[in-house]
Length: 135
Length: 388
Ligand code: SF4
Ligand code: SF4
Image (tube, rainbow over all chains, first blue to last red; front, side):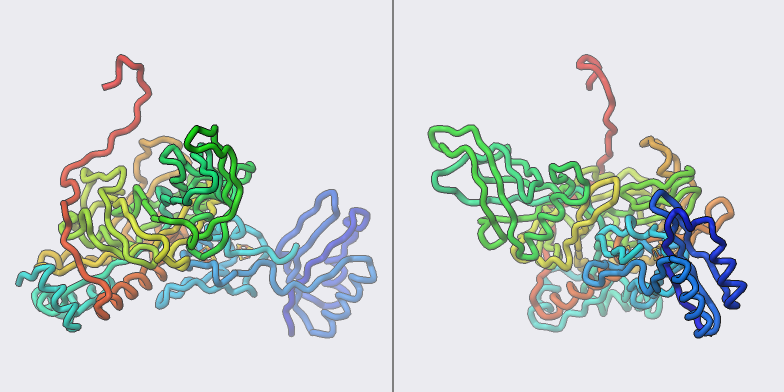
C-alpha cells in the first residue's frame, strides 16, 4: 500500500463529473479530501490517495485522460530554516499538528508529510519563515 | 554569605568564576539548597528573544558635499525621524514603508544594516545659507554611517499577558494570529529565563548595567516606558506586565542572529531583540530569586476580542502550563504558542555565560537604581481646562 498526495485542477466545465467517486470505485483507492476549492478558475482538490501503487498510477492516468490536471504534491509549504527563530507561533495555528516543539532543544520541527495544505501558517509566522510552494 | 560585584569581577579576571544559566540553577538549588548553591555559584545569566515594538536606532550619516540639513529622511523608503541636527536621524522599528504595504519597515532596515547590507538613503530639505543642498539620494551601510546605536525605550518586559480570542473571526494582533472561539492562546515572556523575572525588584539591574544586547555588549540606559511597580504578585514575582528596560548598544558590534524583523500580518512590523542580563549572586536572597521556575510564574489570560484597555483576565496560568502546549479555558483544551523564542533565550543565556567565563564580560553595579515606586497612567480624552 502506498499513500500519496495529489493536487487536482479542473476546468469549470468538468467540475460536475464524479471523478473522486470513479477513482474510489474503479481503482479500489481510498481517498481523503484534504482541501477543496471551487471558483471562477475552476476547481482544485487536494487528495490523499491510498492504495496499491499500480492502482494509484492507473487512477492518475484515468484522471489525466479525463482532462484533469494532476500534480503530485510533495510540499505545499516549506520552512526556511535561516529565518525560523523557533518561537513556536505556528505550533498552535496548524490544524494538522505539522509543527512539533522539541521539549528538549526547544527547536520547532516541521513535518511536511502531516501538512493538509490549509495555508493557516503562512500569515502567522512573524519572521516570515513559512513559504508557499504551490497551489 | 555575602559577595560583592567587585569580588565577582576579581574571580572573572582570574578565570575561576562559576556561572550558570537561570535554567540550570533551578535544579542546583532544588538539589543542594539555597545556602550551598549561593556559596558555589557567583553569577546567573538570563536571556530573552522576543518582539519588542518600542525599539529603534539613532544614526548619523555624515555630511554631503555641499551639505544638507535633512528635513525628511527615508531609508529603503521607510521614513526616519530627523527633527534633530542636520544629519542625525532615528529609525523606529514599527515605522512602515510608504507604499501602503505593511510588510516592510524600520525593523527590516535595522536588521539589514546589522547584516551589512546597503541601504538606500533619500533626504529632502528646504536649504539654508549653511546647508544649501535640498535633496540627496545615495546608499549607506553600517560601515559608512558614523554612529549607529540601538536605543530601545521599552524592552524586556517583566512578565506579560497571554492572548486569546473569544470572537468568531481570526484576529491579527501584536500577540500573533489568534484563531476564533479560543482556538489558541499566545504568550511572550521567556518565564524562568527572562531577565527581570529573575531579579523581580531590580536589586542588581539598574541604570548603567552592562548587558548582552543583540549579540554585543549593551547597557541599561533608563527604566523602560510604562515601567510599573504596582502590579499583583504571586511567589514574589509580578503576575502582570510590570517593569521594563530602556537599553542602548552599538549596532556595529551586533549580529543579525539576535536582531530580527518580525512581520505581524495586518498589525505591522516589530523587532525581535535578543537580551541577556547577568545577575550577580550577592547573597542567599538573590539566589532565591534566580531559582524561580516556570511553575511559579503566572500570567493573566486576556481576551483580545474585547477592544478595551480594561479587559479583565479570564484566569491566571503558569508558564509551566503554557509551555506544556495546552491550557484549559472554560473546560476546553486550548493550544498555546510562544511568540518569543525559548530556544534563542537559552542560547543567549549560554552565550553570556561563556563570555563571562572567558573573562570577556565584567559585571557592573548599577549607577542608580530603577524606580521602586512607579505607576502607569492612562491617557484620558479631556479639555484644556480639565487636564491635570
Ligand atoms: S512561527 Fe515561524 S519562526 Fe516561529 S517556529 Fe514557526 S516557522 Fe519558526
Ligand atoms: S499549511 Fe496548514 S496544515 Fe500545512 S503546515 Fe501550514 S498550518 Fe499546517
